[in-house]
Length: 425
Image (cartoon, rainbow, N blue to C red; front, side, top):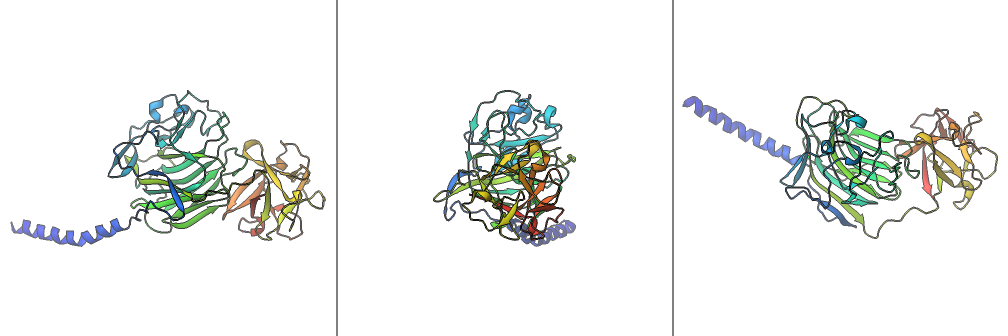
């Protein structure tokens, strides 16, 4: 009895010591934001307060039109105490073994249509699925409060968006991955974006994968948000600005929320289930609406170092940069989609394209075939700006020598002379 009493006494004392520690751990969760946001109106709200998903908002299958075995794409989840928990079990099957290999997914989405998100261009639309639009929208402040998986190994959790404008088999719709964080890197926040053939958005993947400013996302709830306007995507961690992409899709997008393993994020370990928890998903709209980009479809290309714009005003055959009035067509450029996700830049004044065919270190303009790789460029995001890489040479536009002409070369990514922004006209 004495031993038991001593043990109980010790356990009580230990509990008194541990209690503050447990309270402290709980306090590390970042608190939920109020549903009222100054200057905005709530447009979409999912608090997961019921015991099942609202079928008017969510489809609990992952892109089912692509797979021949529809039930393999069905989400596994629970909703309890105001939290959605999506999970992968040891017996979760590959959702589309023929075209997506071993990838296992548990995911829900607010939009569905045949051909939506054709991530593999050899993949046919397997069968017709009824159209579904629980929520798709253009622009807004998107926010989620979530606790990420703590199982390690290969896999990731994701909250992402796909455009809905192109309903053809090409499915040239932009993608923005607000969260795409790997299990193996629990202290990071991975953000990704790509145009997928949308000529008005990024022609190459933009990716950030950096440590979070504070906290432990795999054991605590934190808030992840994106402010999507017509000209930029701004990402917030616990209400603090984290990253910016100075480009934005200009079409309605649907949301996808899921957990994955045996994908590009790595092979699973033997810890099951793999799960993450979501407290809420909300979208607000700016009071007064959003000013759309101009319908002209033209841009001025501005250098970060000089603050000046690419133009062809002097008709030298070489691209210049300078302080040309915004109304001059010589400084206005449109983007045209080129093969394999590249883009071509066409001048509004003379209808000719930027290229490097003469191999003289200067960017030229002229009548070059769409198949000529010297006129094809990709856009790489650096610190919110874009670096413009030529497909033929693998080198970048820059103004390093301050000659008044746009050059190309192997300039370090940190040099402002090789960083550009696109300003709609």
